Length: 190
Image (cartoon, one colour):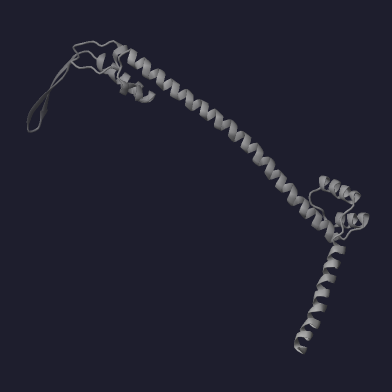
């Protein structure tokens, strides 16, 4: 029984010591007055970071410890940075929303234009495969078709003497039906 009472006797002073240290912390953590806060805030607006001279000057003016002022400025910078990030996030979110809506409108316009192309292709009896070809391929195939269609009929006979013997070859390129340029995209079957 004596052991139990001794342990209680030891724990009571420890608990009282903790309470006293908490009271001391509460005394140290006094709230700043409105005047002190206003002065600190105006100093922060002028300069985000304080040099040691200004910190000592503020400390004397406000009756605070230099460490308190340093901690207040550190906390204020953290709040300021957080606010800046929130503002940046909000502006980026707004820009994203605008761009996202613009993209959606453009995609809808592309769908409408493709539908118009399909309708026009079906009206002019052009195959659906032709409308799916990209603009660059269409231009290339059209210009190639025009080159082929606009060539005159050519016949070349050439003989060449080679040291060992004679060789001859004939090249014939016939284009019997002239094709108007607007038909260049339609397949041609002779």
